[in-house]
Length: 109
Image (cartoon, rainbow, N blue to C red):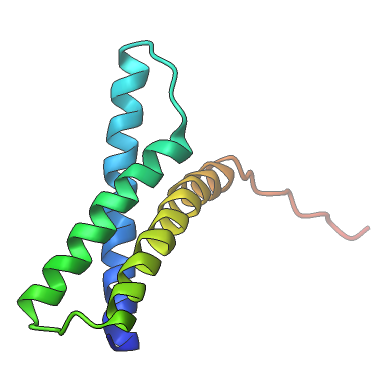
């Protein structure tokens, strides 16, 4: 696996995993059920990272070597970290930006 392919799969996988995680969290919220966002993101990352990387290997006819299998496992972990850290931080940043109020300029006397 090349670095370019790894980064591409990571980017797409993190976005997809983040969206799925948020959809599942909203479903649990609407059903008034308790949940762990990190566990949901982990399960999603295993599914999205594992299946997405496997599909990429098969479509691109990448051989199943030990190094590529290690990259597949690493992809699951980095997608989990990307989805866990990514969406919440982006949401927090947007909320902080929306709360910024411009300061009035002081006039020199």
